[in-house]
Image 1 (cartoon, rainbow, N blue to C red):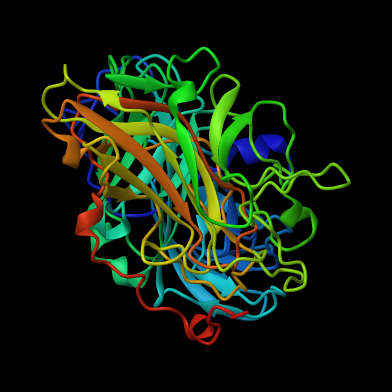
Image 2: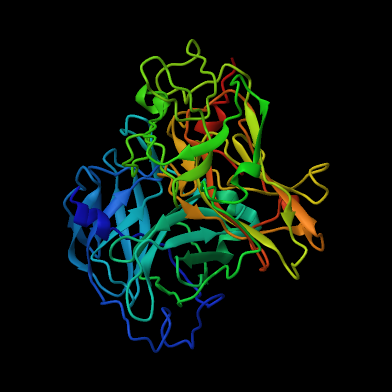
Length: 512
C-alpha cells in the first residue's frame, strides 16, 4: 500500500461523551477544546479500509452506502466511497466474498480531518480467509480515530489508548499518532465486557505535554472518526522521586538483580538489552509464530526506547549460525514444534524476576505511583489475567522479605476470532497488532504508602510451555512520582475472559 495512504488511515466507534479529565478543559463549544489557534481542517471521507475482526484486510467485499454500491474492496481492503461521507451518521452494508452480510454505523463528526478511514468489521474468517462468520454476538467490534494536537500544531508520536477500567484491566488498545497527528484504535473485546465499555476512557499523552483523557462510550458495530484531543504543554510526572534509565551512567543500574525462578537457561532471561544488537525472533523466521498484519519489523526485537539500554525478558542465546532466539521460549523443544505451533519450550514453563534496589522514599508524601515505558508481545490463546504469559508488578516495604502483587498487565479483553490463535500475538497495542514502546498507565503503590523505603519487582511467568515464541516484555525509563494511580490494582480482579466462540471452545490448549 502507498505509504501516504498508510499514514492517512484513521479508525472509528459511536456515541461519545467528551469531558476533560486531565491536562485540558472544555467549555462545550468544541469537543477538541475551544478557543484555540489550531483547528483540524474538515474532510469528507473518500476512501475506507475494511479490516476483519482479526485485523486482516477484507478483500473482495462489496459495500453499499446510501443506496450506492461501490466496487469490491481491493487486496488492502480499500474501496472508494461514491459521493463520499460528509458529516453525519451513515449505515454501511457490507457483504463478504462468501455472502455473509453485516451492517456498520459510521459517524463522521464535524472534527473529522481524514479523507481515508479504517473500519473494523464484525467478521472473522477461517485461516484460509474463505469462510466468514459474524462475530458481533460474541464480541464488541468497533473503531475510533481522530487527531491529537496542541494549541498550535499537530502532535506526531503521541500515545493514544482506550481503557475500560478494572473490567478490562485498564488499557486494551493503543496507537501512536502518525505524521498527520492521527491515531487509530481498533476494538475487539469479548461481549461479556459490553456494559463496561459504555464508560470507557480514551487517554492521550506525549513527551513535553500533559496527558488528557476523555470519556467515551463504545457501541458494538460502530465507527466514529474525528474524535480529537488537544494537549497542553507541560509534564505528566514533574520531579520523579525515583528514576531509572538503565543507562551505563545511571547510579543504580548495577543494583538491579535478576532471578531465574523456573527454566532451562543458565541465566535468567531478564537481562540488559543494548541498542544495535539486531536480534531477530527465530520463532518467526522458523514459521512457528506470525507477525501481526500491521507489523513491519520483520521479527526484529526493538532497540531501547531511550538511550542504549533497557531490560528485556527474552532469550538471548546465539546458535551455531550466529542467530539469536529473540523470544521467551528459553530452551526450545524442537521435536514438539511445527509450522504455526506458537513455539514450544522444553520445560513446562519458565519465569523470572527483575528486582530493584531499595528505593528511598523518606521524603515522599501523599500518593505514590509507578510508571515506565514498556513493550510487550505474548500469546493470544489465553492472555488474560488468569491465563498465561503473566506480567506482574510486585512491591516490598521490608527489604524484599515479603512481596505484594499490585498490578498485572495482561488484558481481560480476550477477542473473538475464528483464526488459529496459536501463532498469533497479543501485544500492548491489542489483539493481532504490532507491539510498540508505550507509556504505562500510573500504577498506585498501595502497599508502600507511608513507608520510608520500597522495592519493585517485575515478574514474567509463561505458566506453561506452549505458545512461547513471541518477543516477551521490555522495560525502560522507570519512575516513581507523587501522583495517584489510575491503573486497576490487582486485588480487585474479578472479571473473567468471557464467552468464547464455539470454535475456540473446541480447540483447547494442546498438551505435551
